[in-house]
Image (cartoon, rainbow, N blue to C red; front, side, top):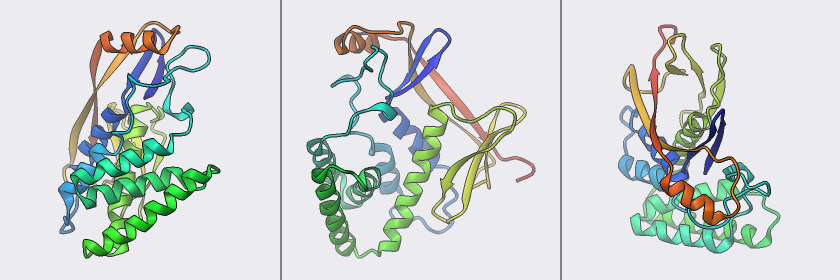
Length: 243
């Protein structure tokens, strides 16, 4: 989960919520004529964090605070295999993109089991690309787009956009352009260069809020999360007149 410290407690954004925000962002991209497997790609973006289940497992720091995903322990190989296999229920294209994301996140691991998992997934990806009569470039284009939407969603959910009109880099898009996001004077957000097919749009998520700073156990945290008030968080993205 994404954990943001606030003056009166914690703001919690579930990872599946963040993935849904990434899919919302994806829907506004200006694809031009390149729309092959578009809806399957957006489905993969929406479901790429289905492995995360914040009401299960160890979700506390040693100090008893909610555990932000950046501090989480290494995911087990069993969990990775389960996510990769379950993605096939949605089809090979969705499974391919989710598999590529798993490899991206786990590349260079010192755990030999995870290294073997990454190698196995790359072999599966080669097979799926051939079976789907695609090219490796097609797959890389779609996955780069997926990672771009994922990154922009994380920047918003983690409240990382600085004040004062300063820019924060998102990442390279599928067109290999470097994109950044910054806050406009009126409080809206602008991505530069502007990659969307509308001049402005609004995206939103549900976040939950905890006033208690520390918890005795994961059971206590889970109970608090299930009863915590939720609020809608909105962002308006608008094209700048300078862009």
